[in-house]
Amino acid sequence: MHLDLDDIDKIAHLARLAISPEQRARYATDLSAILDLVAQMNAVETTGVEPMAHPLQMTQRLRPDIPSEPDQRARFQAIAPLTESGLYLVPKVID
Image 1: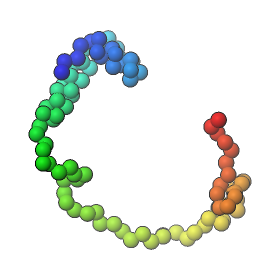
Image 2: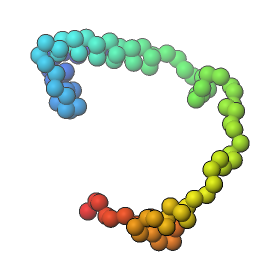
Image 3: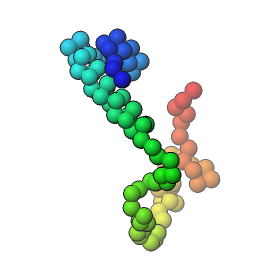
């Protein structure tokens, strides 16, 4: 797919990007190449290909979920300005 300079201006406006006039031609070439690559990938026949999250069929080894520090919640809440039912109370910042 070939993008012209008007297309680049529209894309830059929508993305709120400031592109100098000297860079417009380079962006048109680069974005056209990216869109051509996407078109090539869309043309590949993928019927019967199982989707995967990772190319290796391995599971990740996980460490045991054991706490490594003592619970200091009561200590931290004792010095907090406001708490209620185990929660920290903070001022409203969004109207």
